[in-house]
Amino acid sequence: MQGTPEQGQADRVLILSDADRAALNAQASRGLLLALVAQGALGLAAAVIAGVVGGAAAGWSALAGAGADFIPNALFALRLAFSVRSGRASPFTFLFGELIKLFATALLLWLLSRVAQGWLVWPAALLGLILTLKGYLLLLMFRKLS
Image (cartoon, rainbow, N blue to C red):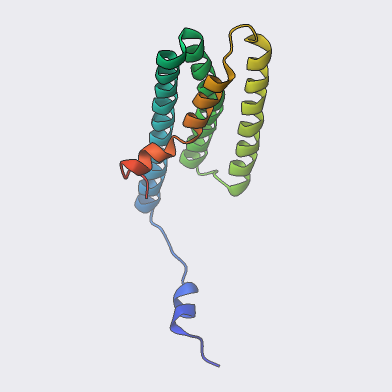
């Protein structure tokens, strides 16, 4: 029995040159940096919006909520960029880093609830968190992600 033409194309192995790998690594690093910039911009926007609408405490709360997500994301992105440049990137590295990032975000939110009980405005903090989480939407709006 003969295979279909689609099967023949699927069986091909893609061999990348060193220049191709370097170009892909540079593109991946640029994508990580753009995602962080977009998340930071939306986190700051959330703080400004909350500050204008709800006052200084709401603005600081939104900034703290944004930071609870941005800081672990930034550390994870740096770790991924280092793994890509060193050639040691793997699915396990990504999965393990993602789990640590989620745990760190939850831990920072818990610490925020304990340390800032007197002035924390939860709706504003959640606004900062959500807008920072959705930072990639800013890139999609300007077609920087494909």
